[in-house]
Length: 461
Image 1: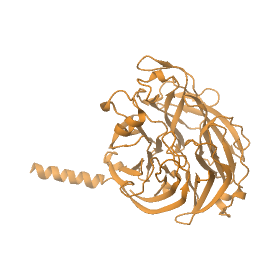
Image 2: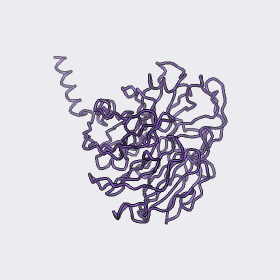
Image 3: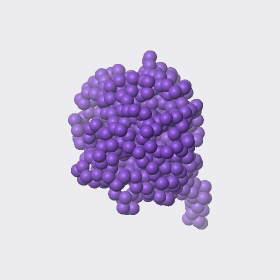
Image 4: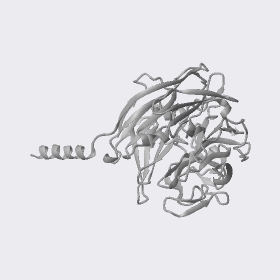
């Protein structure tokens, strides 16, 4: 009778927990048959996982930005749920073959303007915004509704060394602009805010200062914080990330990455003041940013020898707790990464790291190999089930009912014949409607242009 009792208990567990959620592909839209294609920094400029808003839903419309084969910046719009796409060309061409010179989109809810920041990697930013109301009126989609291209963010001078532009809407419907000043390994993370039709500087909230001593005794005195997101949930702003050191001596081998540790901080005043996971104050934007020596920031320690990836992803659940995807080569495959592209492709694994309401952190390895150097994206549905979109558009899922342990491959873009290059970009603003929109580019070779797509999935959570 013990076997019967075991089966009965197993059935009860299955009924209570259910199974991992699934996804259903509902459409696949071709945006451009000839998107610009070149590979640098292991990525393509039209689709990088760290783009917070390369594809963006606001109200009844969805927007996408990319560069076509002539290098021209293109914006597209469609009415949801399944309207046809309209495109326009901005008067700007991609300046250099650098895959980090991405296009970022934002909407300021108060006046319905569409904001575009693009084509910068430790260089001047290129920016424009639309006439008021374009995001809400549905007026004709033509380039003349956008202003001239400038090297400032509206009225705000953000300097000449700008990287990773991101737009974020606050809970009180202000628009924020997040970016890095300085360069990789020696930069500061900055925040600006749009309110009442003008931009103002909030200031640096994570600085390059401090001294880091690695496990091999080497020291680094400069770095930058790479963030996994800048995410509001339940009124609170959450940021996680990893530090990248300037001094390569902190690694066991020069072929690795100087990224180390996963850190976390939150803000309850739109990024003005910051606290660590324990609730202790750790910094003030503009006057006292936190740094590598600030106490209590590290929530998952890892030295610089495992190819820890920067700028992965995060999401906030309905209880206001943060979920992060990080990836690196676990120690069981070796304690020293000597070539991060090869080692991550051969042995890289993604991990789900999440915070509980008592402040504790849990890390679980996702049981599917990355088979790529690239990053993954995490989203949560309305029931807090998890969907992780891995490189090549492989979607793995886990249910909240199982404690996010029943990881399942729900969609395989390779098996489906999509021929996705690698990393993808997701439309986070559309997730509350139960739809996952994914921007991807078809793999190519050399600099031969390839197709740019948006594919939609229904989340079956």
